[in-house]
Every structure is written in structure tokens, then in C-alpha cells.
Length: 293
Ligand SMILES: Cc1ncc(COP(=O)(O)O)c(C=O)c1O
Image 1 (cartoon, rainbow, N blue to C red):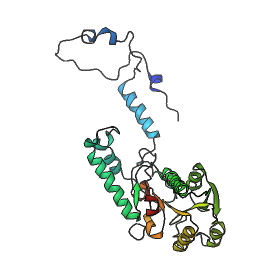
Image 2: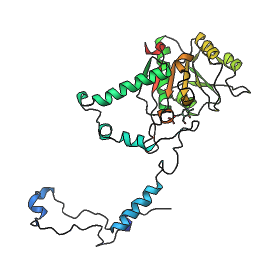
Image 3: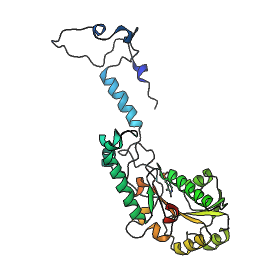
Image 4: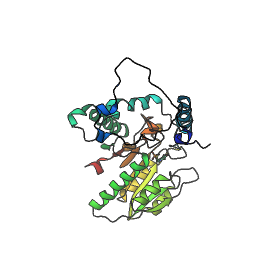
């Protein structure tokens, strides 16, 4: 249904609200405000009764997507819930009114929180260092792939191919392509896991990295991960983990212990971080000592 603009609902002389009479002396605005700041003609505001204003904005709010209506659909492969208390917490003035250029002595609480969060994320995933900078999982992928690119450049190696397993989320090949890589698809086997023979055949000297989701997008743990890790590293390539399904690993095992060099966390999935009206939900990355040093 189309909602009219509030200006289309306006009719001359309708009033939304009138101030009640009081016993203060009446003063004209012209007596208080210099004439150069006064309008020559009245502002063109809609003239609408209060009930119409309320109904208009309620109708608009009903068109919005919100957690009382449905779950946030981003995060296709992981069950998740983003409780309202998290939105409330983010909205606390200490967070929501921070300015990036504020003097650091006034932002110590937020800095402490970010520092401790990155230390916790490092520990949880077994990675040497974490950056909280990327704004979403896909943004984390791009940041991680660019780090991989820089790593190979620093080694003086030309590697222009990136391997992505065919069950991967669409953002994996998209991020790798944006970073300038040629994407080579690795087959899944009849089991639904990475086909090791196909991987072996495609791991050539120009491969920069393999991107893997673990558990993968059909929910299966890549049980040959240690063999995969060995093959990839022996080839001089790096191992990227899409951490969108990290829920399944928490407290049981860690990407760092499996030999991954880069991992992105989808905080809006694994840790129920708010989506801010359905938008991105934070995608920090962790890197192994190989990249952190
Ligand atoms: C497996 C997988 N990787 C990456 C992403 C991208 O994450 P984001 O939506 O935070 O950009 C998703 C999101 O659905 C995903 O399911």
C-alpha cells in the first residue's frame, strides 16, 4: 500500500497541537530575534491534526522491518536471534554519542571495551591478532583477502588464484573477485565435504589461498581439515576460514588450532550483535602469527 506524504494530508488551518494559555507576558518573536534571522514567509509545514500525524507515522513504522516482526534474514546459514536488549545497549549515550574525533581521554571506556573484545575474540578463535574494523562478514572477507594479497606481495610471490569450495556462500567468491583474484572452484564430494583429490589437483603454485567455511554451509564439519591445512601450507598458500558458522565450534575447537591464517567472525550471528535496522552486523577478522608478525 502506498502511503501519502504528510504534505499531501495537509489542509489549511488544521492544527496538530495548541499550547495551553499561560499567564506569562506575551512577547513577539521579532522582539527577541534579530530581523536578519527571521523568515520573510512562514515555513511551509504540513497542517495536519494530531490523530492523522500519529496514524501516518504508525503506518510508516509498520512498513519497517524489525525484530518484533521477524528475524533478520541476513545470515542465511546460521540460526540466530538478535535480542532487543542488545539494541538498547548500543543505544546507550556513552556509545551512540561518541564522536570519532573526540579526545581519547574521554573515550577510555569504549576503548577498553574494544580492546577486551578483541582479546576475547583472539582467545576464542585461537588467532594471534584481531581487527574490529570490518563492518560485516563480507567486509571481513574482503579485508582478510587483501591481507593475504599483501602477505604474498611481501614474500615477493605472484599468486593470482583463489580456491573456493563449491558449497561456499556467494560472498566468498565475490570478495575474492573484488580483491582481483581469479576464482577456482573446488568440488564437494558425495559426502558434502571438500573433495581432497580435486583440491590437490587445483593447488598450483599460483594459488594464494583456499577459502573454507567450517562447519560448511550445509552444516558439516570438514573433518579432514588437518590434512587440508597441510596440503595448503606445503603449497605456500594460506588458509582462510569463513567463520559464519562459528556457533558450532565455540568452546569445542578453534580455527587457529586447525591452522587457519585468517578468519572472519559474524558477530551478528555467533554473538547476537544487533543489526541496526537490518544493516551490517560487524565482521571482525583474526589473523595467525604468520600474518600478524
Ligand atoms: C557462510 C557465510 N559467509 C559470509 C556471510 C556474509 O556475512 P555478512 O552477512 O555479515 O556480510 C554469510 C551471511 O549470510 C554467510 O552465511
